[in-house]
Amino acid sequence: MPSARRPRLILAALASCGVLMAVMQTIVVPLLPRLPALTGGTATDVSWLLTITLLTGAVFTPLLGRAGDMYGKRRVLLLALSSMIAGSVLCAVSSSLGVLMVGRGLQGAALAVVPLGISILRDELPRERVVPAIAMMSATLGVGAALGIPLATLVVEHADWHTLFWLCAVLGVLALTAVVLIVPESPLRTRGRFDVVGALGLSAFLVCLLVPVSKGSAWGWSSPATLGFFAAAVLIVPLWGFHQLRVHAPMVDLRVSARPAVLFTNLAALLVGFSFYANSLATAQLVQEPVATGYGLGASIVVSGLCLLPGGIAMVLLSPVSARLSAARGPRFTLAVATGVMAVGYAVRLFTSESLVAIVIGATVVAAGTAVAYSALPALIMHAVPVTETAAANGLNTLMRSIGQAVCSAVVATVLSSLVTVHGPTLGAYLVVFVIAGACALAALGLTLLIPAPRPAQVEARVLAGTAA
Image (cartoon, rainbow, N blue to C red; front, side, top):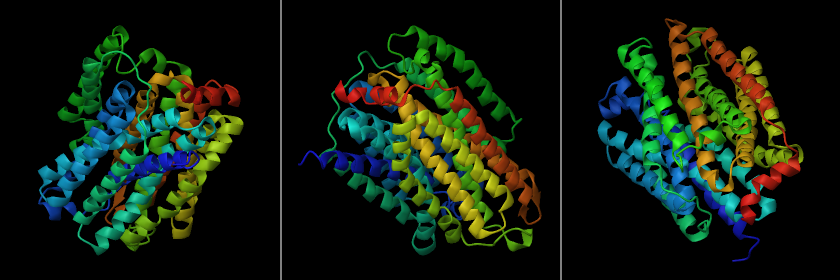
């Protein structure tokens, strides 16, 4: 195969995996109102089909990232894709809530493909192609999420809902085949033994944190179950941290993670994840509100999904722009611009939430900022960590985005259920969501400005160092 074509094929294969994972994560959102009737479960029970994917994704993303650094990134990537395929088939052949939860859990475990793909690109591509390639790979998280809901609404309206999962399974097989045929195994390895105790501790902490975050609005924020989970998370953290500081090859290198360049980037990623997810959640629901509310448009579920489509297209188009901006001015500058654009998008939404065209414009501006932000985050992380830890470090950064999305889901649900009339949430409830999301974007901008700012040439040298190793 000609050498000029192979980098493009590697990027195409890995990017398709990233888009597929993000689509898989969001496809059940349009189904949620119908799933109680389809499965025989309650609304609270079927909401676990989102929660379980979030939990397994959060737990397995850093674990598989670390395993990729130690045992081979391509090998672990194939394992993750196989998990997604198995989970999709389970969901496609059953309407039992228990089987669906197992299938969605297996699907969620595959969310590690993006940090693994970013690390493979760093190891395998020519130096001049790495920065734009990782920008595109990172943006697939947002692109897939923006495209997943419109795709799911079309399928739900015109076909049996199991078709969604058959589609994921078929696309998963194609993606796995492409990785087998095109993507080489990276020779770079982290030495040492896998930190089993650290992995168990991190998993326990994430479960104890994310379960009450996801279910707190349903259980009650002051309920014994919610407070008990939060208390357990608080107790686990210092014990896990003490172990990580003492072990030779920790699950998460806390000393590296405490560096300002890594710490502030990860905190910014959490806030960007929150701000991005608020855009998707609020837009899809806002345009469906009935006309009787005084502001609602009464749009169909298909129209609500299509409102997010321009944002997905903008994310695809802006990924290479982000890479060029990072190469010229550095990823810190790029992330600052991106978070500023997201804040502007929410400012627009505060005054244009009763017009379909204006809603789409505001949502697209936020999505555009997200695309640039998601593209800049991996470059900042890879500048600050050793080349043998890139998959684990990017896995942690992806985890922070997922935590931001989980917190966002809980906050949006709480706000929209608190400010209501007989017809549903008030317009003020949506405006509060936009204010909170815009404030998160501004806070991410503030954190970005605290990140040490090396010269662009130094950034590129560090990001590309793995290709020469």
